[in-house]
Image 1 (cartoon, protein in one colour):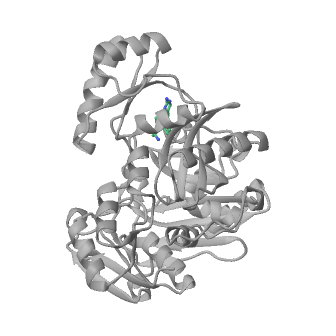
Image 2 (cartoon, protein in one colour; image 1 turned 120 degrees about the vertical axis):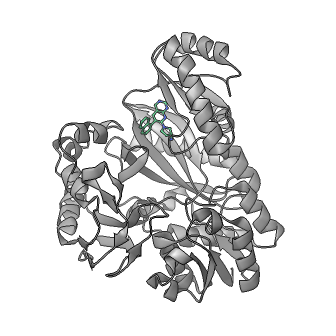
Length: 450
Ligand code: MV4
């Protein structure tokens, strides 16, 4: 097992990793930018190192600065968290070349799934259902038009290096396809330095359901069931839950088996997620996330596993030690992302000082947050300031518990998404579990903000 781990991240996920390391008896080295100096969670680490100024490019995204900190602090592994460098194969390569374990997939595995067209080809080769479309990237507009004619409109143009919905365009006819190709390509070039795109039939009302997997170096892989992440706004997840109201045991078994097969075929170990679109009884592979995700805690609550500890243990070369039959999903878990955003200004970031902060508690409530009264939210980073989770016997009780927990939560000094969560949790469609990725946009279009 590792002796000392550097956490190449900030905020709630840095705190989450510090907590896991503590329980494993591993020393922690936190890094922070000048904008995060004085944050209380840094006191929980054995050592805290300033790695640069506020802008991410000069701190949390700077490979040389993080590697220098890791070498000076003499760690044997780096945990990248999510976002920042977590899916950067070059960073993983530099870590390993410096004799520091990268807590995540191998460089090869990151590259194999980071290219979405390549990942789709791997899924297809495993016999996993994929959305009909181009075979790999399209070389020009003529080829794109040919694919659209074959599968029928609407189609979706997707960036091969995509993520977060960037470089994605829906086209309803030949004219919008040609113009969409140009905008998707230039958006993808700007965001990822790679303008290649592929085409898929556009599924109009899917649910976004993902399967959590864990694997070890011997090739043992298990899945931990699904998370339904269909409640999204601008490709940012807002609420996640497990189990999905749309996934029954037979569908779970099929999707789980597909995710395990794919993870094995790409040589995936440690923690990862396989994303699917679900429409009725059908599911389609879309992509693999080669990192621990924000919403991993939902799976922790229903399985009783600590995914960060599992991830660290597996990265250190330990074996899984349990099989698929040992994994159980119990009860129902819901997570809401608390973001410092202004509902009256189109959910624009609302940085500032949190003057008041009161955290809910009691049975089945978990709050993962790096906030405290007086905490500053810098304008440089993501607006998420915490995650509120509940676990209960079933979905109706989990919803009631979340409403109760949201009533206890008090945040003063900045605007937040708490009102939006209340609104979603009291929506009749949400209560019935009847929602797709279109749900939140329609809810917001039907009334005023939150
Ligand atoms: C799709 C899709 C419909 N049809 N692919 C979103 C980000 C990336 N993970 C893949 N995503 C989607 N891929 C096909 N063929 C719908 C989504 C999607 C989505 C699309 C537009 C607006 C919001 C969305 C939310 C979730 C998923």
